[in-house]
Every structure is written in C-alpha cells, then in structure tokens.
Length: 92
Image (cartoon, rainbow, N blue to C red; front, side, top):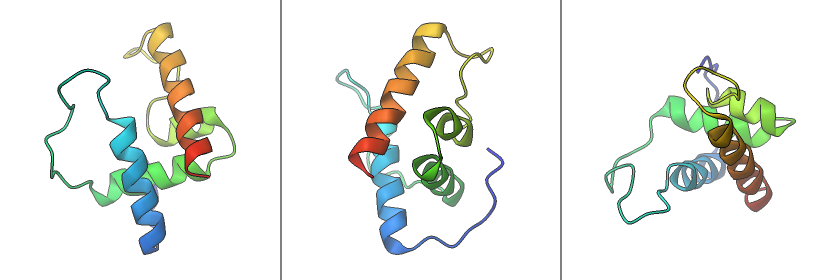
C-alpha cells in the first residue's frame, strides 16, 4: 500500500479496525475473514489514511483499491466508492 509508518492513538486504531471490519464484511452469510483475526499495522495505517483522505478517490488509493485497475470491474469500482463514502461518513 505504500503507507508510511505513523503513531496511531488507541482511538484511531479502534476507528480503523472498525472500518476494516466493515470494509471486508460480506453481505452474504460467510465472512471474508475468519473471526478473531487481527488486522496488521499496515492495514490499520492504510485504513486510517483512507478515513483521513481528502476525497473518496484518495481514500481508495490509500487502500490500494483505486478505480480502473486491472483487478476490478466498473461495477466493483462503484461499489468501492460507495462503501468508502459510507465508511467515511459513519466514522467521521
């Protein structure tokens, strides 16, 4: 992700962890991640950067999920933009 190391407060870590839990939640029955799995410091820092970014596009870039990449479809790009906008609004 290219996120520089930073010192995050307990509140920032909790906010980033909550956002990651929502980002990777599955709208179906099975979760994408096993319960009880911890987030790495890189993942937490990336999400903190995304939540603090000046735009949804910058937020997605901080997560390595920028639109128009070879790994996503236009539909996934729209879902990611909508999801990051919702996360940023909920956790602002």
